[in-house]
Length: 154
Image (cartoon, rainbow, N blue to C red; front, side):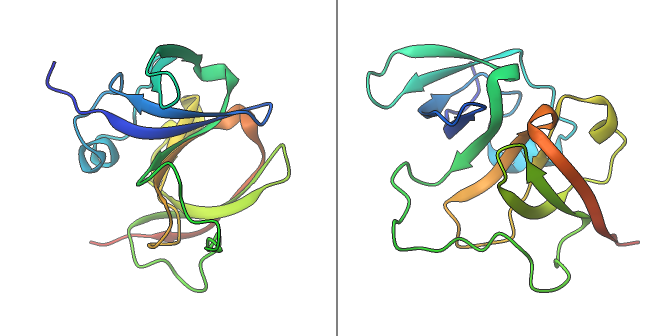
């Protein structure tokens, strides 16, 4: 098949979490996934759950976001940094978002018109020590979206 399994936590719109592995995404690793944005996500993401090992179909429209994680456990004691203290050192749009459930976060997204057309986009979280490596945010789950700054190189 040529694709890797990604370790993911699917946050459904209603608050339910589905932890597992998926290989139904259009890349073989996270770097390729980030570099190939815009990402064309399938309408359903097959997730092989950690609990049963059985694949379940997660419809894209049922997602708040799909978190690509380092571990399924995370760290109960760790307080994730959700906001940049200053200008992010990476290229892209520095954005602030508020989800419909009230959660707020910031991150860097690729500077592209596809944020207007596609159902979602990839976000690089601000905390390099976070369990979350990248996040696919479904736009329908957002209440607010604000561009704070454009970071670019020539």
